Amino acid sequence: MSAFHSLRFRIFVSLIGITILSFITIAIVTIYQYRKQSQTYHNERLLRKEQQLAMHIRYVLSQTTFPVEDKYIPLIFREEIYHIADIENINFNLYSINGTFLISSQAGLRDNKELHCISDSILTELSNSVDKRLVAQAKYEKDNFQYSYSYVNDLQYKPLLILHIPHFENDTFNEAFLQNSLYNLGGAYFAILLLTIGVALLISRYITHSLRQIQQKLRTTHFLGKNEKIDVKNTTTEIGELLFSYNEMVDEIEKSKKALAKIEREKMWKDMAKQIAHEIKNPLTPMRLSVQNFERKFDPKDPKCGEKVADFTQMLLQHIDTLSDISDAFSSFVSMPSQKKEQTDLNAIIRRTIAVFDLPYIHFESKQEQIGIRADKNQMNRMLTNLLKNAIYATDNTPIPSIEVLSYADENKVYIQVKDNGSGIPAELQERIFEPKFTTKNTAGSGLGLTMVKHIINAHGGTISLSSEVGKGTTFTVELKK
Image (cartoon, rainbow, N blue to C red; front, side, top):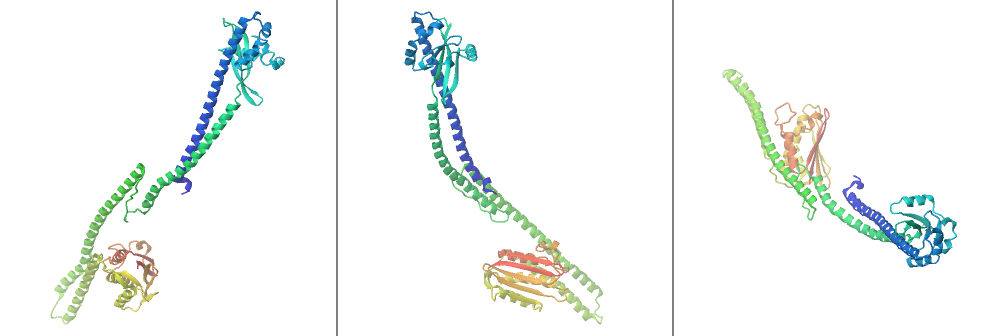
């Protein structure tokens, strides 16, 4: 699985992403809030200036001896307009109600023709506004300013003049202050980001460490093996619940294994009892028939009486030997768990086992003179005896039988191969060859020989495998620990 899909990577990216997203969000909110507050502040301040200017203008108009008419306004405010501008610290212009320029507090603008009238669109918008004032934005020499138009009313709220404030409150300084604030905020968040990266690494490692231990345990968990519980301290509640569930599962597996083992043991003994009864009954039936037949036909005066008695006796002995073999096979199978392991020479065991059969076509070869192994000598002998018996039976109908036994060893393991050139085992039967009661022999057989072989090898911590081809022979390979 790609590292980009791991939980650790996702936790790391999530924490970093949350930090960056929070910075972007706070920056956006800060800009929006600052500009909104700045705009509100400027609007309120501009409104106060308008009100103060209007109050001064009404006061001057109330003290003048000139008629309050458009043509006399420049005379009335010829000196007063500068005095008002100095008091309020702001420049302004006065227009007539129909938009004609009258006078400005900026002496240099009095002859500016662009100020001689207000456009009809502004007059209309001003007249239609609810509060009879118009505020807008203007750009002057790369700086942003506000400008406003408002009516100056008399005491009866009749419009007398239009007050124009052309430039109000440059936002350049405020924008620079905002940028500086964002720069400082960015620096702080960069430090927080570095801290978050460190914390994210620690958190992701802390969380995934427990999960990795669980993963390793789950990989080694299987029904047939020994499963260990997980004991991880100082975990989160969720990880602790996961560990508790896993440990409960291990307990359930152990209970199921014991129950299954009990069922299998009971089934095995039932099957074995049936098999014993069947195997014993096979030779008893012909023995009974033979005895009955002999009793019916026996004549002491028959000249061949001695020969018939000898044949009858030989037949009984043959069936008795069969019963003895069956008894020995089952006895060996039942007594397998008892082991007396000791250090011994595997090659010596193989040579002694082969010598018992005394067959010229059984050949032994080893890559080492001696192969040391810790094992039960009797069970090793029993295992080899059954493999050789199996090979001898497989080569019964082979014109030139050959059985080869090979042994060799490496640093940790020893290997035994028993190879014959017999009839071979069909592929569909190879998987069942080690099952109890299963046999390919046409003559009487317990079907426990290879089962016993596998049990002995498993008890010694080894494995057995076979390769076979019909008509060419079979090779059994045994692998054992030293």
